[in-house]
Amino acid sequence: MDSAIRALRLGADDYIVKPFDFELLCHAIDRILEHQKMRDEILLSQDRYHALDQIAEGVDHILGIHGAEKNDEPQSESMDVEVSLSNRSIWPR
Image (cartoon, rainbow, N blue to C red; front, side, top):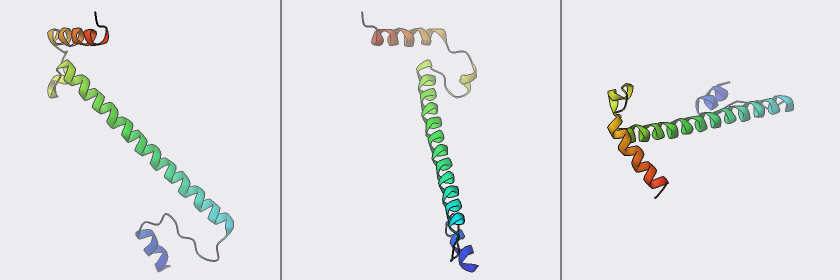
């Protein structure tokens, strides 16, 4: 029993004693694979969140919104300049 506790403390996902039951082994493997799938999904969600956050910061920068100003309406003059610059780069005349 001490080896099971030690193994789990060192990072083991499960501990199976010998001789082991094949069904218990399959169940443990399924559970570990499901946990790994959930970890991967969480990491992917975090990556997507950070990418969206960076995009939002870029938009804020373009619109001239900083810090506490984020709750305020953007200034129309700065928006006109940025939009006209964007239009020129997207649709050259």
